[in-house]
Structures are given as structure tokens and as C-alpha cells.
Image (cartoon, rainbow, N blue to C red; front, side):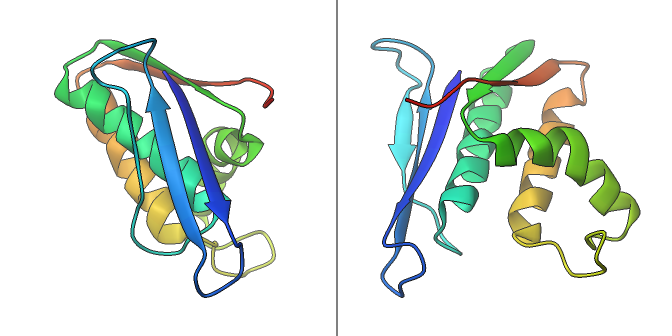
Length: 128
């Protein structure tokens, strides 16, 4: 599945983010939408991954590879989250993790998906 997030008017009170989840041409599970909370591209990227995992979980797929152009998402899952978790969701500078609520939501979705041994991975693909 390919996921992406976007946000227009970053930093403005009227900023709006959106996400897309694409399983393939004309696939019935393809979806897009908006989300609640902090409106940034980074949050939109995380939210897209959460939606993809939730769809795969509800469809009872046994493996899921998420393709994303977000190094923020890739690094967050593969490098930062395990460290943040050990550090009680604090950065190496001793500051609270930005977007902690979304990262925790993603962690819960990943844990739920992997509970029965399903395979879940993320792959970086360059953006256009």
C-alpha cells in the first residue's frame, strides 16, 4: 500500500491536512480524508499509515508493506519510537516528543496488527 500526507497553509490557524491510502488502481479500499488534531504534513503522514494498518487489520491481511516518501515516518518507526518509548516519550534533548499522541496511536495500530504474527514493514520511496 502507498500512503501520503499533505498540509496546506502550514503554521497558520486555518492549516488543513489530508491523507491518502492507495492499494492499487480502482481498488475498493483506496481512501483519503482529513483528520482531527494538529494539522501538519508530518501528522498527516503518520495518520495515513495508521489508516492503512487499520484497513489491513480489518481485512485480516497477513502482511502489509507500507510505501511512503516520508523519511520522518520511516525514521520514527524504525529508529526513534523504540528510543522514545525507553525514554518515557522524551527526546535525547530531554524534551517531550512532538506529535506524541499520533506516534502512540501508530504504535497501538502496529501492535494490534502484529498481535497474531502478521508481517508489517515500511519502505521508503522517493517522492515526485
